[in-house]
Amino acid sequence: MKRRDFLATAAASGASLWRPLSFAGEPRRNAAGASLRTYRNLLILVELKGGNDGLNTVIPYADPAYRTLRKNIGIKREQMIPLDDRTALHPSLQTLMPLWQAKQLAIVQGLSYPQPNLSHFRSIEIWDTASRSDEYLREGWLTRAFAEAPVPSTFAADGVVIGSAEMGPLANGARAIALVNPTQFVRASRLATPVSLHERNPELEHILDVENDIVKAADRLRPAVNGAARDGQYPLKTAFAPGAFGTSIKTAMQVLAACDTPQGRPKAGQGVAVIRLTLNGFDTHQNQPGQQAALLKQLADGFASMRSALIELGRWDNTLVVTYAEFGRRPRENESNGTDHGTAAPHFVTGGLVRGGLYGAAPDLARLDGNGNLPVGVDFRQIYATVLGPWWGLDASSVLGQRFEPLPLLRV
Image (cartoon, rainbow, N blue to C red; front, side, top):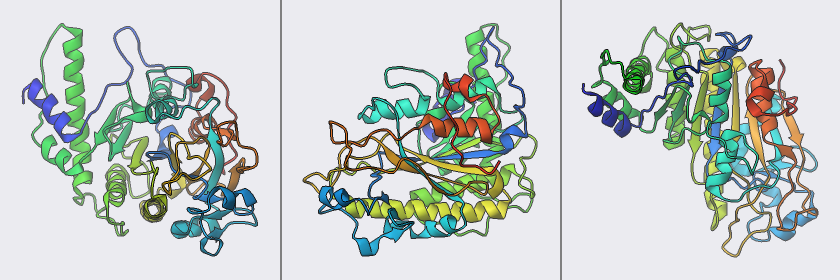
């Protein structure tokens, strides 16, 4: 297959795999402890694209200002799922309760950053790169982490992005594959063959290396994406919810099934360190109640099926699942029964080694800033420091550019 045809095929299929940060004269650095064992601990990121409304997700129902600010879209007291005498969950999150009761669901409240930006594009760029609000970084925070402490070269890829063409925290350097459309990926990757050409031009050599990496990774992941049984490990017994998000989770779990031994350990040459999923539709400027209820049900049902599949694969205790979004929503409802762009919001962290409970700063609706938004309770980079430090055993300060205190979310 010709180079130009292959690149067109990869683009059309939504499959993109980029070389690590290892250009001529700039080798990737090795960090102590970065090994197969380090990245046996899997990270699954779930982006709530558009900015989820935190106050109707994790509800401060004991705060009298909640009802004042949300006369029309506020959740009725009798419908809430109480967590304690001040906090409750949206009724659509009922399927999260087994995780909460097992103390394997942590809720971190008040996540944001100083001087928050309310632009979708700029704010998600800040979250993806772990930058300050006045700082512009090119590489995603995971790309920088893998440059400091490389994922074993025998792994199929550093990460797999499912359901989105945006590489997010894996942008500009990580060996990451985007499966925008898994079916097209399988069909297109069957057409690809490795390219061999001895060429003195470093740029052309780099392009050919990229092509060959795509082919190799596609070959490893194609049976998983296609759902074909191999080594008796799948199809999985877990039932997955219908719809795009449920299908993305199913694909992610099949990728892991292809990569793992029955003991839940990556097989040589088959592992991935990160999987990133996207749940779209949270930009609820109007008619929020119905839209958000449906989205939160997809999220909760997806988490339940993910937990079931990870237990089935023997991976639950070495997987960390984290939600994130560009921002939350404004505390006061708007005139269209929706909410506008806001600042701080709660996010979920779950996994077999998660120390469940409420963390961070509960929203105090009597102390809004001059724009009517919630103040920062916890810097989101503390979540990243928890992943990089306690979860992977890496130097979080080196990756993030300064020290952020990890959160006590893990039993490790």
